[in-house]
Length: 388
Image 1: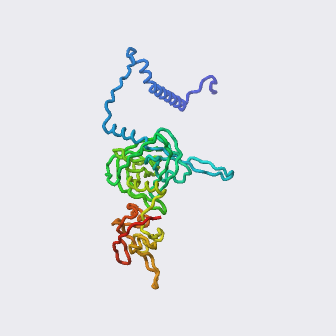
Image 2 (image 1 turned 30 degrees about the horizontal axis):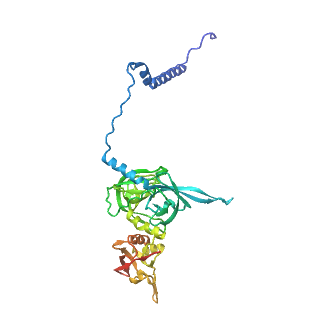
Image 3 (image 1 turned 90 degrees about the vertical axis):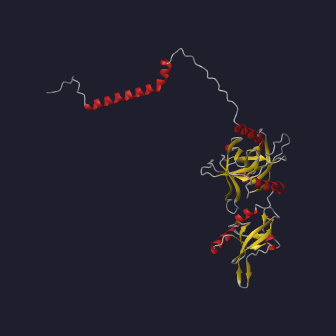
């Protein structure tokens, strides 16, 4: 018997399941919409219409805490002495041979004296063809390079400030710093003008590698005050507002502050900057000997004795007058020279460390060396001479 074409087909079980699923989805969607609009519906229909909107009264602030007032006063006094430094570099088009300047980077610095000298990090101006110094009041000045000491990461610029000269930063000391002292860093991190960060001295007498062929930078101050790119060259101040260091580096895999920053101590700055202003360069105290980093490493590995191997002493130099000997050629063969093991009781393991140790003294100072000759070790006193 044929089915009646006018009779609708019986619903299948699969179609019924789909319809239930669609109804369930619609119900869930409706509930979600209702949940989102519920606060508005409550405010519109359920809140009493008789309650007027009341303005909140301002709670009096009261006096600032003593440490807050001290920090604000410190920043306001020191701000005018801090500058923003932007550098440019000359580039030449390979095809047209046209020459122009392009921005290279920026950093911070501070006013050193009334003559317009500005102190910053050497790496802030390294490789630049020009630098512009911006004062806190917005005035811009083209700066001239006075001198630099890459070994200390210090450079001195000069600007011609004819009137309304900003005050120099008060200079403090760093040899008497204690771990836990409060410190304040002012600079221009990421180009953000005149930013203050605070922290403490977290460690002292740190050493950073100066790079290939360069002596390490010694006696650095470690601080947890946030130091970021652009802070370089800015002052690190103590709670009295005195300069105790130059913010120079951070330890961070990402390049941003990770709670470990370093500053060149002001005792080093006070020793190096006057020479840069007077001579345009830093005259290092020296022994009057010739050494070689590569040969020194090979000799130390071959003999097992760590120190500075003297290859040659300069004629009539300080080392020769003290009786030091370099490598000598004799009928019996090559005779090794003296090996400097320590300076004033502090060990040296290579030429870079020796330079850093001698840098704690001035030309003309007398230092005591521990010197090994053959199998014997003796003490030698040397009067330091001007280095190259």
